[in-house]
Length: 108
Image (cartoon, rainbow, N blue to C red; front, side, top):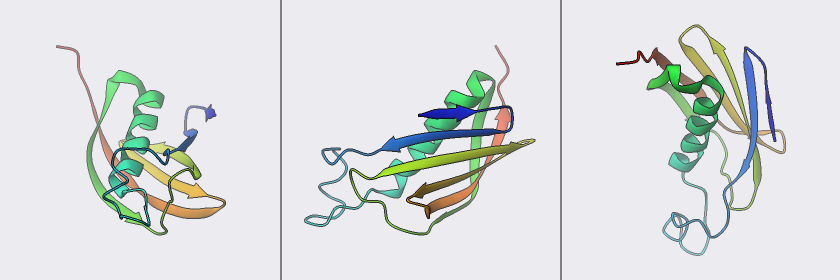
């Protein structure tokens, strides 16, 4: 499910239980690695912003609660200038939040 306008974008996603990164994170009690959550945020941002912008850096990020394989989560993005704020929630619990710094990509 996707919702967006000029200032906000929302995407719902799930990391499947058979994802190849899960067996080592943590054996017998898998938790979705933060890098997979951030990758979903990156993909959502790229889809919304298009090819004219790139994520330059992650000046602020915090993982607040674990996400388990198979859980459905929602990414909320909002943009103010070159700052892209994000939050990831599941069942109204914040899983992760932070900001990305964006740069403009020029055609070569």
